[in-house]
Length: 305
Image (cartoon, rainbow, N blue to C red; front, side, top):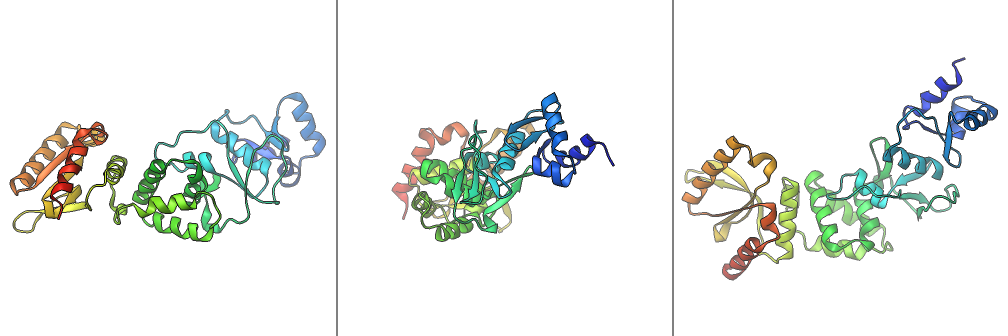
């Protein structure tokens, strides 16, 4: 038979070096007395009841998340702020504490844990990120909505739809399924204000820019509008456009556009569009929250037919 540590590590290597006592006893076939001896010696430690840290992995935030999930029981998912960070929600910071969602009445009672409970959780409401079970993007938005500003919810939804077309539809379907979740009405209010073609957003900067246009009450616009020359040949897709007003808007991010070759190409293409009679506004991240974008919206609102 393999040595005790080898058997334990077979399980722990898939779980950031964390295992449950049940896994050690049942899956690895290690006697409770051996586990107790390892814990007394300090070779292993027990950060939460019935969860053992084998000491094979450096301390990490993801390891801590898994400790909480293992302690909560087999049906536990990282949720709320923890899930938002795991799923890469725009500007969602790594939370100091771990949130976990469990099925009501079917989880371990651990005094050290503050768990969120739910009556039901569909298969489409959970996923996995970085080896950790967590709530899906739509479910995470719904769970956080009651305590989150509408502007933040809007930004999350815009960015998630950009990354995963159909996100808004899945979120709306979830609000119909969970009619008593406190944030439901806020989510529906935010969704009701979104442009219809948000899946065409191309970058996080566009997400921020479009969100600001919506907040400012801009007239209806088209995302990723294809500008063509007089022969109908495509010139470029612009981030937003008001075709009837012959106005184009591009959000200029530094990651790509600050390259000298890209900058020269951009200016050449923009000159061609302006020569065709388009008013083209190019705005940076700083412009989005400043007077330039506000002035453009005022101008468009005044001439909008």
